[in-house]
Image (cartoon, rainbow, N blue to C red):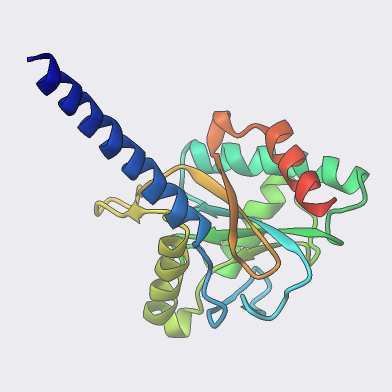
Length: 200
């Protein structure tokens, strides 16, 4: 009986270890496809493979989100100020906020969202959406970006998306470095330290 218990315990341990290893390997190999192009809040094209000079902190939102998305954006705005003080924002790192609701979140809507948080209009924090003329293609592209980072979302039909709650730090080649919780659990200090460690 004791032998059976030990075998079962070992099997459970091996199964847990294998599961953890799978997720670690999956995250380590995650990368945003470089051939995807979206448009930013000004209607200009943004291609993910075009800029290999900066780290990127990637946030997924939709502007009708009642809580976790705006909370994350607000915390990122404070983080931005801290990175500016350190002289690295715009030089070594940029922010990308990608809407998962490109049909409603037009460039104009995204500009209004930015204004609501007092986010300056520069090229170092871009808000990305789809082109209304090619909305189905760009919805697919946004889904592809999200899937590449294991971010999942679904519209149950009422316009209030259900989504996972992570932001992502990717390297100059859009490859996964780390993920952080969204909302109230977004720890600005933790994210700041991870960014500075990667820069230095």
